[in-house]
Length: 244
Image (cartoon, rainbow, N blue to C red; front, top):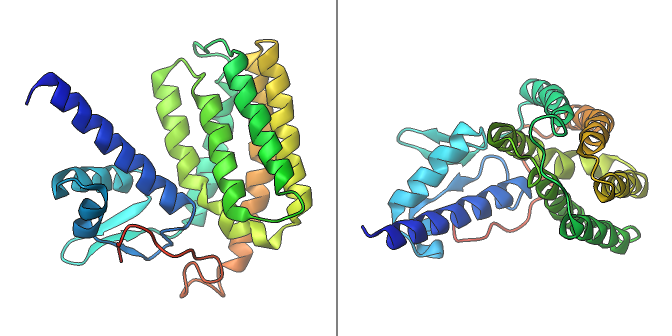
């Protein structure tokens, strides 16, 4: 296959991966949902081979479980594993300003200001899926400034491993209080970026991971016993893409 065709194929596969990962993390594909390779291939207009590669990657990231003879299923949250992941994410955040950070510019600051504005728009009109999407944009803006490739890749993978906690645990929290906390975090990180202090960006992120995600984990754990047999009840969105 010519180099250009290879590049186009990789870009399409990457786009499919990002879209399926996003749907899992926004609970558009809730825990326990079976993902059909055939229907995903039809939706994204690709062969089943790249879909299999995407699902294999998502399995390595613990977002899906591929069961021989049964299919591929979206995984449930593993609370014990998540506690360890959160602790690790805190340490990784501290390294953001230490391992070859890139210099933030007006573009990154503008994206963060826009994220804050979008949160202000829903402060009085709770929309957890919009919140989760904004949180992803905010996080990916920070990771785009991590110069160390290994740190960037691991940080991103672990973020998406914990991202579903927002939708799962947020309904039990005070919407306005929690949203205001995240707005404050974004504002502090934007201020640190404006003066080029990536070390401060990492430390601010670390502190909010400690405060917010640990609180969410407690809420998710408390809600789980009554919901374990009905994964996603009360927060499901209609699955997209014809997969079932």
